Amino acid sequence: MLCGDLQDSRISALRVFDFIWIFSLFDMLVVHPASTCDICLDPYSITAEPVKSPHAIACGHTFCLTCLRNLTPSACPLCRKTFRLESVKKLHVAEPPELDGASEGPENAQLSSLLQRVALVSIEDAPDDEVVQVLTDVDEWLSQHSEEPNSNRPLRSAVAALRQYKALQDQTARDKAEHKRLRHELKHSRKSADHDLQTSQAVRESLLTEIEELKATHSREVSRLEDGV
Image 1 (cartoon, helix red, strand yellow):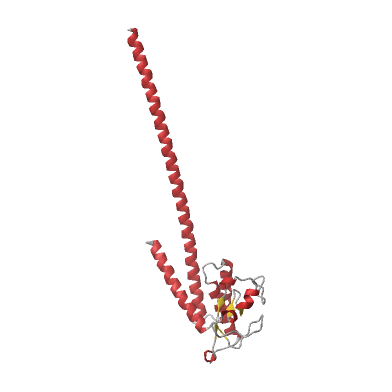
Image 2 (cartoon, rainbow, N blue to C red):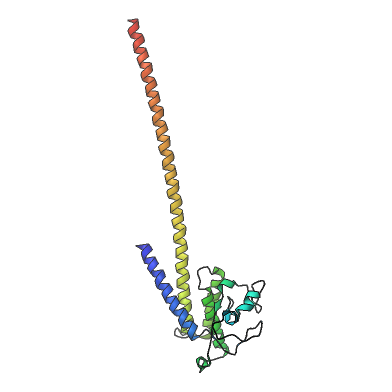
């Protein structure tokens, strides 16, 4: 029952996280159509062509996919933090109507960057140190900008979902370790039981042999005594 409840909790958490990610993507994670890649300086494509579309890396900086593929080693040219190419996230290039009334101040840019970073570490094999760093940066940013629980709700919701997701991942890892330990104990117990069975059979055969030898000795003594009479 516990395993079933845990699995249901995982599914619920993942559904919540998927909803938050989609909401954040269309609400915040957009790139201005006039933006350009900081490496090649070419404008980002608003078409489905992936190589010229903006992609965010673990540190939150954004470049076109072509330039990211050509970086050797895979490190951000702005802050030098390393990234994994398979973990980059494609961003949405905003059409002009999407920008109406949107704030382009530094606070909104920081918020968008933090949402991008949360999304980038919200994968199954994200390194723990990257997750901890993102959560630390988000907590610090929120404490500096507003302590009102209803402020910056997309970021707060995304972080809450990430924490729940990572907690479930940690629980899954502990469950796997416990399952492995129990399997090892069962294998050892079976091996010990087989050894004990073999030992008991050997002892039984040895005792039967001794009994037969005693019977033979007794028969010889009886025969000797009868012959003497």
